[in-house]
Length: 303
Image 1 (cartoon, helix red, strand yellow):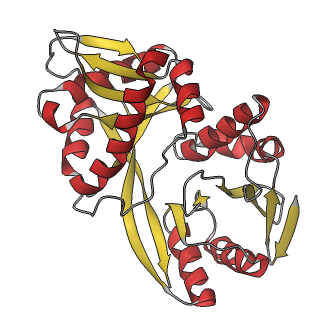
Image 2: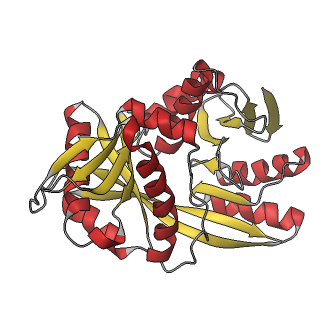
């Protein structure tokens, strides 16, 4: 752990995710929906470490404390995909600026920052000022939480869990989801950074039983939806992918509805992210009973 004091605030960097959770756990649990990315990613790293999977030396977790010692902000850098953007939760404005200066002084290369507004704008802006360059928006996202589920019009077929026999198809559809998400939002394929799990991580997800297909009346797989295991009582749905040939038939609505129902049935709260530039997905989730919680952004620093 390293500490950076500043007037009225303190930034503490942790390399051990368990130590981070011990310090920030109560703060994260106070608003577990907003904290979902940090909590699920941190628990995933802990699970991987327990399984003997090596972690990157670049990983860190951040706790921001006020003068009394109360935690008032958090963040992390543990993304497994380039350009390995830090993810920031809400924090005081001066802490976001101080974080940028700390990362600059540490010599860390940071080409993107994701997370809550306005912290990401302030941090990215200061990094651009210090290192030269400009900040551009890669993606505006919106976090939703499910209230009362509104069942969609039913369609033929049903939900089945992905198995190890489906690993190649799951991997193929994950990759297609990443590219299609950009196209559907009017961006070039590959324009925004998304997590693409490696084969080992994909196998772990399949074995966890948290990936499902919708199969139509003939038994054909026509849609894929996943969900994270609950963290602090919140499970995040995603990815949600329908191949182009099967779109517009209600597969996504029915799959997300059933996955969301199962999440709530296990006593957890269901949430998901949307790309604000994709009107189709925003319309589908709103119709199911998902309501907006907070807007976030993925920003890139262009030199």
